[in-house]
Image (cartoon, rainbow, N blue to C red):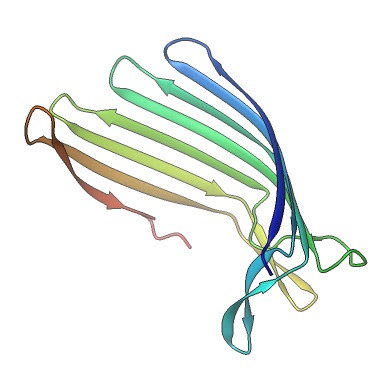
Length: 171
């Protein structure tokens, strides 16, 4: 069956100067026949999982400096529950962290090289083994990227990049 979702979001964005942008949003998603991947008989398969609700808030701040340095931070709080049907109890959703935060920075050199760094914090999550709730610990993943702009003509620029994801090999 197809998944059915009704989603609501209310937010506000405010620019405090030419340098600072802040946004705040609250959201609520209600899903019926949520599609998830489960291991059945040793094989991962997509199945409908009943009802799900995800609600939370997101806050973000972006700073643009006059020194070719851009930075941003964001935080998301999530509350997510699932249940098999209307007569079942609500349980915490698997693999959805309650807390997530991101820091990013980017610097543009005058000769066309851009350096970028991103650190993503993911709070602890849960999964179920039968009726047992297993905690998956929190972790931080860091990514870095170098991008060099190469002008080919007055109207055309090519960009070459090198990207390292999960620099410190976090799970």
